[in-house]
Amino acid sequence: MSLSTIWVYADAAADKPLTITLELLAKARTLGASSVEAFCGGDATALAATLGAHGAAKVHHVGDLGGQLPGPAVAAAMAAAIGAGAAPDLIMFGMTYEGRDIAARLSVKLGKTVLTNSTDVRVDGDEVVAQTAIFGGNTLVDTAFVGAGPHLAMFRPKSFAAEEGGAAGGELLAVAVPELGAAGAARIIERHVEASSGPKLDEANVVVSGGRGLGEAAKYSMIEDLAKLLKAAPGASRAIVDAGWVPYSYQVGQTGKVVKPTVYIAAGISGATQHMVGMKGSKNIIAINKDKEAPIFGIADLGIVGDVHKVLPKLIEALQARS
Amino acid sequence: MNVVVCVKQIPDPASPGALDPATNTLKREGKLILDESDSYGVEMALQLVGTAGSGEVSLVSMAPNGEVSGLRTALAMGAAKAVLVSDPALQGSDALTTARVLAKAIERLGGADLIITATESTDGYTGTVPEQIAAFLDLPAVTFAKHVVVDGSSLKVKRQTEAGYDDVECPLPAVISVTAGVVEPRYPSFKGIMAAKSKPVDTVTAADLGLSADQVGWAGSGQKVVAVKAAEARAAGEVIEDDGEGYLKVVAFLESLKVI
Image 1 (cartoon, each protein chain N blue to C red):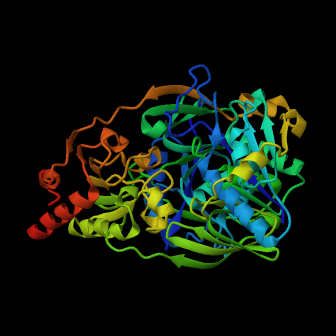
Image 2: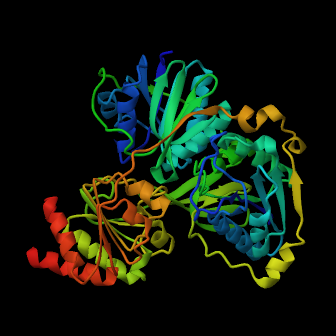
């Protein structure tokens, strides 16, 4: 079987496609489909050229949603387009806030399963097979879709490399959002952007993350100081985000950002599965933790069994002396 | 105000997980505990009902065996009653089927003003079930709620986003998924633990909910596992005890990588 059409959900912010959208387009182009198309949950006028350059022959878009949440609105628009004759064999989503909500709503509308947390996908004979890493990434599971498409699959960020290519395209096609009734009743009243300084967490060459081992919120300043000296992005484990020490945007892990920097420094982080999933793809890992049994040492290239309150100040001082 | 909280009973995440080689599903035999992620939803529900001054918190859960120990934890926190959908036929259910079953269980309770879930379970982490439940019940959903207030017949939610958060307003009834940290879960009191032992747990099968065998479990699932293999392991490197000079090792390593 070869695929006819693949849709990639085009997540975007500030008139730019998110990196994961471009990653998924690059992967979609390798699956041998006759048409790779983007589907945007907003107005894609400003995005079409970029999406086209990355291989989207067509860019379906629903226009400005006003304050509507994308989940029910975009799912209904996709289902309506499918009902009207569009026949994507595969719809690819990133594991993002929007992607999750849309794929979930759409799965109920179409009565189709969604494969989540996928890190790879292939066409194998008559089947579309998605791969997922479980148990913190030590086991790989291949799962095939059963029955006819559209198959719905969600992918973790950084599963594929973004790359321009494919035939020039980007033809804009407007899709209407049907009347949603009660399901569409939620409204966004105001959007808030939390500022963060320095390089972006998922793009930085070096990431310095702190965890519960720091002991108290005030000690997170050591992470920020070290990050500044290394031109790194500061990150955090879920434990200290949940505790309110730093904003959610700092979180590295399954429910946070996936990072693959050249160097990842984990300070006072034991290495819960939830965290390791988000950083084990780093090229080099340095761990500092006082518990020598901490799982983080199992994947660290350099592990220092010691108190972060003693090791970090000396490290910061040594780096300051060099700069 | 009546609130239903969807809770999951899972194998202890502190012990390493394993797949059943015959079915390629997560082994769920033995004692199951309340997914810690769900304790936030239970607490949120108790607080909202407390503020409203009337109504109660009910639980719905689904498990292949008749396990109730996790439910008892949530009942001990203060929930009034539970529906447990327990049926061997449920084994192999995908997220879509899980949501279908939970939606039916919520309907069995007569619906609710508000349905609360975690953002994702700790053992399955698909993160799709909350929005799927809402779709089955034709309700609005606000996922990733980090702050929730009920104002008359509507909700005011701070919803986590990629960039920060959005203020969202939503009429009731609705489904919300709450992040860990939305509230601080209480510990069950001794009195609560004793009281939980006699709280009603309505154990039902898929058929009791009007679902046929081909709608649930493996038969109802649109997916099948075709291969399981070990990932290439990341080898551990050098681990040293800090003798006061450990930071020098870090400096040398960073130098070798030309980061400094």
